[in-house]
Image 1 (cartoon, rainbow, N blue to C red):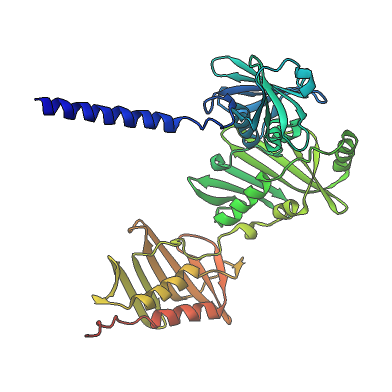
Image 2: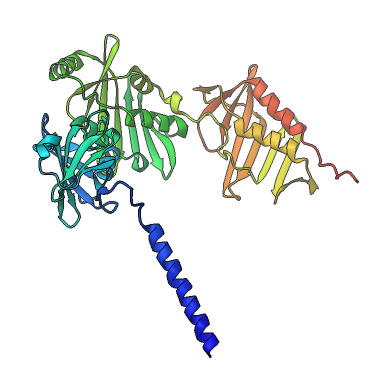
Length: 436
């Protein structure tokens, strides 16, 4: 009994000793610089930034949790820049403690401060951070928190992260649509009017007529428009000149982006060698880079899908090809390709599949005349859910092709078709493994 009690006492001692060591380890080192302000992540809902040489800026989170500039006038906020400022004001760590009980804040440039930041939390509490003069000899910047008698220094980079200008925080995008929620894109260009519609993640051309779209080209157009920014350093006088210049400019294109919040429009004009844009989402006329204008000055063929097959990077399940009196049929079972029940060499089949995947037109043909097919191909993919059929016909020295149930005619050079036929003919039966 006594031995049991001794063991229990030892175990309890070890437990409490380990617990105390864990608690001590969790404490910051005694010489660690103290935190000036430490708020939970996401707790900041409003920031009022007052600099002695600039207008006050007020940032607030709206009902949707998005940052907005509400003063000196309503502006959209750059969500990344606003979020970084909220993180910076929510956690302010000192470089060193200068005075434990400062009696003369003015000597540190803290009364009045060079910058004053009022931070409001979800519960409505407000903290006021004062930023003063830079300490001598690159010693950081003096900082104090209202209600706390101490004066600290913070590194210069910390000061930079706190003292933001209105231009730093404004949303500079000319259009503010949500890219992943776009349902329609309209491009009214000099060459022709084009409209794209999205079905789930797949873009299609719906105007001037229904056509397959090259999704990468449509997304590149969207990215160019999304990245178009205002230059907020332009003077008021230059802004007025830009507006007058725009009215006399030559129209280049107008692009319209539609998401659940509505439709936004960007109109682009050219004056001599310069390009200007007017947005429905923000005020004013803004000079833009020539590459944006170039990306809008396009025809429908620039956005058409030139690939004959849509199975993409996934391997098909079944392939049939007829041409020149020959028939090729391959079906995938597990990891193996079979033809007439025989296992085929996977490398040679993959070469054929790659040729099919890369099969693309060199141009689009307006004529709808289509002779007797010289080659017809059927590809089944997506676990049997997608079946694509392509007919290829000889036209002069080259070929034309069309997909089943689609009016579009694709022009193809002879070498592309010859290489495809050769790859099909080169598929061979798998060799049995060599005996060791």
